Structure formats: C-alpha cells, structure tokens
Image (cartoon, rainbow, N blue to C red):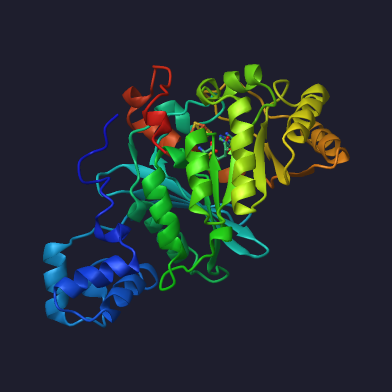
Length: 376
Ligand code: SAH
Ligand code: SF4
C-alpha cells in the first residue's frame, strides 16, 4: 500500500525540529532565535498559520507561508466521558480521520495518539485492524494530535500533558521514521518538553524495529502486546506471530531492557475462555521466567468490538489471573477501564464512523506481512 505523495514527507514544516526551523529561517537571512519562536508558537501557542505567530514581522510570515505552507489537523468531534476521558476525532489535511484520547490520571493527563490511519496487522480482537491500513501518519500529524489534546484539555480542570502513549490506531513500528521523529518533536524543549521516559510505545512485536529502537538509546518505555504465552494461541489472535514468533520476540524484548535499562511492559487483553484460564496464566509465568528481565504485565479488560467474536473475561477471572501471576513474583496489574461510554478503545470510534460512511472500505483480505510489515 503506497503512501500518498507528499503526505508522508518528513521534510514538511510540522515535522521539523527546532534546529530545522532555525536552518530554514537562516536561509532567509533570519537570526536563529526565530526557529525557536516558530516551534514554540506552533506547538505551545497553537499558531494555526504563520499569521498567528504574533512575534514575527508581517513580511516574514508572508514569505514563509508562500514557501513552506503547512496545515494543522481539524477537530471534527469531541466526546467527553463521565470519568473524565476525552476522545477526539481529528480530520487530517487529506480528509482521513484519526482518534486521540485524553486520559486523566493522578499525575496529570496522558494522551494516547494514533500512528497510522488504520492498521495492517489484522489482530483478531481489535477494531483498528478491520479497516486495514490506509496510510502512515507523518510526524507532524502525530504531534498535532498532542497539540489538539492539550488544547482540548485547557478547559477548567484540565492540565498539561504529562505522558504520551503511542497506543492509538496503528502499529507504530510499522511507521518507524515518523514515529521516531515524533518522539524527538514531543521531547523538544520549546514545545511539550516531555522526557523520553514519559513516552510509551506499544507494539504488536515488529522484532527488527524493536532492536533498532533499542539502539537509539532513548529510554522510551516499550510495551509489547503479548496476549498469549504460546505461538499457537498468539498466532490465532495476532497474525504477526507467524513472522515473529515468541522465540524471536522475547529475546528482542530482553535486548530492549539490556540496552536501555527500561523495564518492558507486556500487554495482555483478557478474552473469555480464550486466554484467561489458570493454565494459560501459568504458561505466561513460565514464558516470562524463561526470559529473565524486569518486566510488568498489564492485563487489559477487553473492550468489545461487535465484529470480533470474543467476549470480555469476567472481572473475577481477570483478578484470579493477576493473582496467579503476582504469586510467582511477576509484577502484574489490571488496567483501569476508562472511557467505556465513549468507545475509547483502540480504533473503535473511527471504525464506527468509517463503517457507517464507507462500508466498502472494510477489508475482506487477510493481512500481509513481509517487507512492509518490517518497514521499521
Ligand atoms: N498496534 C500497537 C499499538 C496500538 S493498540 C499494538 O498492538 O500494541 C494498543 C493496545 O490495545 C494493544 O495492546 C492492543 O492489543 C490493545 N487492544 C486493541 N484492541 C483492543 C480492545 N478492543 N480492547 C482492549 N485492548 C485492545
Ligand atoms: Fe494493529 Fe495494534 Fe490493533 Fe493489532 S492491536 S490490529 S497491531 S492497532
């Protein structure tokens, strides 16, 4: 699936780091502090056009608008849940839509961003996979989700963005270059200035890209979507397991820990009578003790997706699973269920909208892996 020309260009203004702004403005004879100003006004003061950069002379705004145009995302829909969760449906310049979710925590707000329009990984329990991947998001579009979330959170009771999770629609490691640039953008000082430790990247297990990310040595928190402790079951849930079975995935997770010193999280969506019985919990313990490293297991109560033939595990079963894992000395918690009333789970709102709007888009073909699945 080819990305539309231009859209996935790393060299467009919203994907520029402060130094690129400074260099570009330097070619127009401007002093380097103008680069910092551009970055700060776009990302902290919500400049939607060059004309909004109030500290710039008019002539400079006009020259930049002519040579380096950019377009911010538009907020199409906002849904606020009873528990403080907010979900944004955002429209991109080419009319595609992505979701961004704000989650309130005791430490402040976290923002869950999408990395692709749709997803090609085809996990059988997920709404994002149903539509397939339409295109990658560019770094600026991922960054603009954080900005839109920060703006939506400025209402009374809201606060600054403290963490970013690459856990929305899409497989971040299938869009490596833009996701990495995004991490650098959100870390940059004149913008959101988040430490890499406060960025979590969740992957279905694109093994070569896990090694590559480890070698960047950025202290980003890695979450690996495991969902099953053996290949037969994991393959049923996640087609990517055929390309990267557990014997390849687990050493990659360990390498990530050894290289970055960061404890890896394993995500595990609880599906009734599929992966939630005590025997499977013991298998999970065996798998994790066979690859010794500090890790954490995050049990996710499954958010029902009508098209997928699963049921969520009863809460009592989820708790027993957690207790069994913990009894073996492995850190394990149950993720809080947030935003259930507003379809806050991965890909659900976009999927619902797209299915109503363009039913022909629903993919009937099985997902493909190969060169593009490994593009990280
Ligand atoms: N593609 C990446 C990141 C996005 S999905 C990945 O798969 O890791 C973020 C997490 O939500 C993953 O662990 C994914 O397996 C899980 N998930 C997807 N659909 C879900 C659902 N309906 N209910 C609960 N968790 C879900
Ligand atoms: Fe894609 Fe992640 Fe959903 Fe799997 S769980 S289809 S990798 S978004």
